[in-house]
Length: 368
Image 1 (cartoon, rainbow, N blue to C red):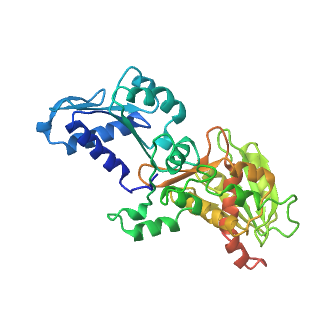
Image 2 (cartoon, rainbow, N blue to C red; image 1 turned 45 degrees about the vertical axis):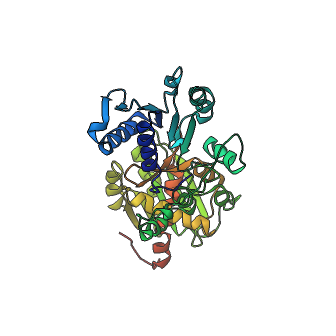
Image 3 (cartoon, rainbow, N blue to C red; image 1 turned 90 degrees about the vertical axis):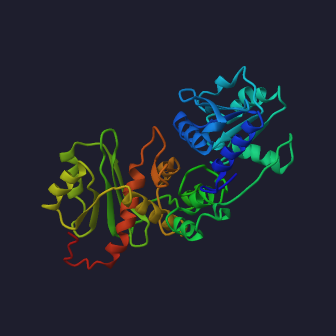
């Protein structure tokens, strides 16, 4: 169980090459075919060509002059292991293999029987799923398992300053899981269940609203308007699906003296432009690959410190909100498949502009 960039995949490739040189048959499992193709190409690049006797670039199989083989399999189709036999099976990013428990018991374990082979599970953790259960077997010395834990800081080729910078831009739970290899309680939720539940208020604050955050509904999404008082407690919550014209009228009906920060991304830009000519104290916020993580992180910090108080509807949506690390290393925030994140983003916008609103002079001050 290792943090990102520790070098686990590189080590696994070298283990594979050594095994092939020793006439072993190795199976290398990746979560998907695309990643298998990448690893296949990297192993071919490492191996001197004079040691390769056969290459199958379609099925991703390498055979060396010793008779050893390396075959790549996708975690989505592990039934392909049935009827095969291997000296070693390496399961890369094991925490991300669909139904790892069934794959291990019904496909991977049986194909090691003939050679009394071994399996190597390597991964960054993804919550306390079956990969974590296998890791505990090693800690408890069960079933011939051994477990190892390394953080990203233990890679001497990665500057610790780079990891420290990542810490500054990630929720604590996300950094702990991705770089310290400490599995989170609820997989990829950036807010944390405790932080969400500890900040729910039974009724909205009756203090004056300092700022409204407005996330505009697109396609099948809802438009959500969230108000916050000067302390960060929710004062207003409105979630609806209306035509653009009725949506505009509802926004125009909000108090003129209060700052209104509205999603102006895509089609929202036209709505913002129309409102900006008739509505006081309104500003637009554009969601980009950098601005969305920024305001989500601000909201995470506000929840962690107890500064933001939310209603149950917002809490429910926060519980299905998650982060995903992209191949580029960037973090993408969005609702789980089949859910919405409109209330979360409305709150994040309001939270982002709350400090600006508190600094404003309410008597005649216009933001735009």
